[in-house]
Structures are given as structure tokens and as C-alpha cells.
Image (cartoon, rainbow, N blue to C red; front, side, top):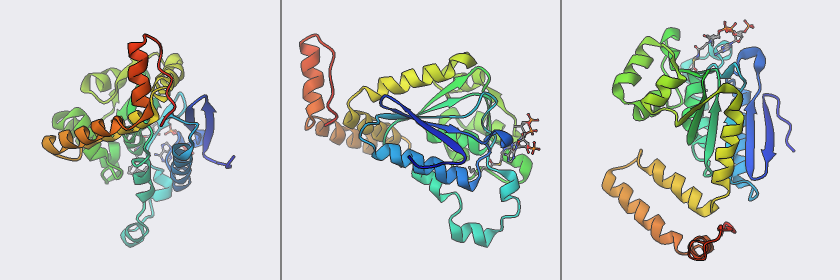
Length: 258
Ligand code: CO8
């Protein structure tokens, strides 16, 4: 197993679990942590024994943003030529579904990391925000784009321009998170959701994630066409035969993921 310094990596049945682990800095996202999260997520993505991922942090912080102390001396030519933050885009290319289990602060890059995941589950202690404006910058891994698509222009402008945080209830009302649970149940709930997803046909789950994400990248007509192609393609899988036979025979489906 690979040695990581800033994350903990575990697995439970078909679920891969990545826990951000820089308690001294409220899980601030430094370059090392970024590379480790991406490496661990890609390893789970390649692992045929894994069907879904969970990314979580601590009770106090999912992540309090990019590491301000590490980035404060950055200069344009170096970050531009290095394509700084480029690896986070690779997390967006992970094909298996990712559940974000968020407690405490999810600010700046922390909120953006949660939005790079597919299902967001919040503890009642969660606080979301894009406070970059208070530091004289703007979001850098999609916050201004994904937050706006998730909650609409009015609330995104309010959050991004004032830098205020929003609690879990407001985040659920706004459509940023799909469930809010008591803090002590967060991981149990997130794992249960991930296990449910991981028990589905893997080709179908990957198609589903790809298809839903298309809705954010293209027109309705193109998106529907894309969905139709994948829908037709699903009939080439053994899992479609199994899923429909199981329904007809009134028994649970057992998917072979092929
Ligand atoms: N970077 C570096 N260190 C941090 C960060 C951070 N983002 N957040 C907290 N820490 C450190 C503190 O410096 C402190 O360290 P020390 O004990 O050595 O002084 C320790 O964590 C504990 O923090 P606090 O004492 O501040 O804890 P409080 O409970 O008093 O406050 C807060 C918690 C409100 C979360 C406060 O820490 C805070 O405001 N943090 C900064 C939040 C922020 O501005 N985040 C946005 C950062 S900018 C950003 O994310 C840009 C995104 C673009 C790219 C994304 C790439 C991933």
C-alpha cells in the first residue's frame, strides 16, 4: 500500500475511503495533499474491487481551503507555467461515483473539493463558503462555476462577493447538498450511500455519472442524444440482462460488473 503523509486511505467492502488528515491546519489543501488525494482516487478508480469512493475530513473541518501560507508567495509566471492546481482537474475525471462527507468548514478549495464530488452529504455542523475575496483572490478549482450551477446566480454572487459562510440547512435548501444528517451519523450515512452505489452495476453507475455530468457541459439536445447513446449501449452489458431478469424473477440482482 502506498505511503501517504496528508491523507488516510482505507476500504470497506467495495468502497474506497480517503480521509484528509492535516489536523494542524484544518485540512488546508497544500500541494502534497492535492497530489495524494488525486493519486489515491485514481488508484481506487483503477481498482476493479472498488465501486464508489468517499472523501471526508475531520469533525472540525472537511477542508479550510487552499493552504494560504504555502501559496502566499506564488507569482504568476511560475504558477502559470507549472499549471498549478491542474491535478485537481484529474479528480474531476475519476469515473466512479464519489461521495463527499462534509463536517465543519468546507471553505474555498474545501468547498470546491466537495463540489468536485458527485453526492454531497453534510453534517449539521457543516459550513460552506468561497471566502477567497477576503484574501484578494477568487476561487481557482471551479468554485465560481460549480457553485453557480449548484445554487444559482443570486446565492452564488452573495456567497462569493461577501465571503460569508452558509450552514448545512441553507446549503440543502439551496441545492448544494443532497442530505443533512446529525454530525455523529455522517460517516455511517456516507458509507451507506457509497455502498448502495457500489452494489449497482459498475458500467451503469459510470454511465450514469458521465451522463448527469454532461448536463453541465452541453445543450439539452446534445445531452439527450448523449444519454440515448449510452442507454442503447447499456443493452450490450451482461448487467442489463441480469438486472432485468432479476426483476422478472422477483429476486435481487447480482451484478458481475460487465
Ligand atoms: N491555510 C493554511 N492554514 C490554515 C488555513 C488555510 N486555508 N485555515 C486554517 N489554517 C490553520 C491556521 O493558520 C491555524 O494554524 P496555527 O495554529 O499554526 O496558527 C490552524 O489552521 C487552526 O486555524 P484557526 O486557529 O484559524 O482556527 P479557528 O477555529 O479560529 O478558525 C477558520 C477557523 C474560520 C476556518 C479560519 O482558520 C480561517 O478563516 N481559515 C481560512 C479560510 C479561508 O480563507 N479559506 C480559503 C483559502 S483560499 C482558497 O481556498 C483558494 C482556492 C483556490 C484553489 C483551491 C486549491 C485547492
